[in-house]
Length: 171
Ligand SMILES: [Zn+2]
Image 1 (cartoon, rainbow, N blue to C red):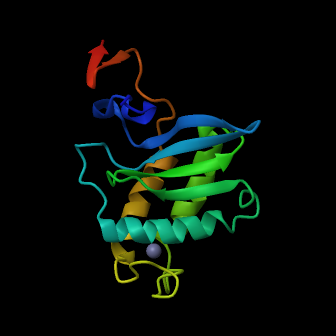
Image 2 (cartoon, rainbow, N blue to C red):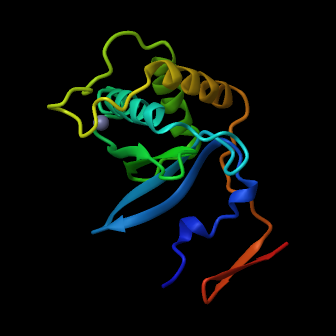
């Protein structure tokens, strides 16, 4: 099987930021998947499952209620590697625009008080797996990234070839 494109990015060089992971054409309509990278892969301590679950609930709720963007949001959810999230939106906005939306969303989470939305047995598949305090800490760290110098382009200058499951980096 072919290595899918998102695995072909050299993860040893990714810094926290906002990246276009891919843009798809769905029956003539563009949909863009953003890589919402919160941690340096394999270097920073990854986000815990409980914190990530809370990030998913609070940020997805914020995005789907934002007056400007709610009709553009297709999906928001965690990466399996727990170093960030994926956001899928209609059309093809630039990562700089998405970063402004994410800044508001993660500021909202960093100062969030009260019940995590949807964290009940009726609304969620594992409602005990939440950690709002850690999610607020993780959100505040990502707000710092977004306010300072988030990266918007994947590391390049390397040609990556995939041959029979082995990956060659030409740098
Ligand atoms: Zn849930």
